[in-house]
Image (cartoon, helix red, strand yellow):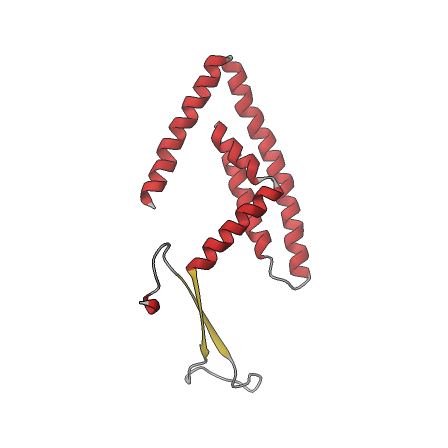
Length: 159
């Protein structure tokens, strides 16, 4: 994981800089600067629009009494898209614009959901005897224990 982060924060900016310098060499530096500014402004505007739409859907799901899990992931992806769109670069701009397209976001959300589900362990057990019980609760109260499993590793209970 550390190697991936190092590559992400060192190699990607170098490639982005190389692409921007290549574009400036093929055109004019003014065009490249305008491209960086235009994608930042357009990206911020689109991210704002998609973010507000996601927020309305989030509130609607809550009002219906449902868990807005999909909307939370969408909001996270829109936030990531906005962050990479305001940073200069062609690859990051492409990734940011793709995350603002709802069908692409749905595909990414499915992948994220699968990865997150594979890392979460849910166990149910009866309430321990020392847990305080009041008259409003029956003896069938349950405790749900959720813990995160390391990526790629197995859970200690499965060994």
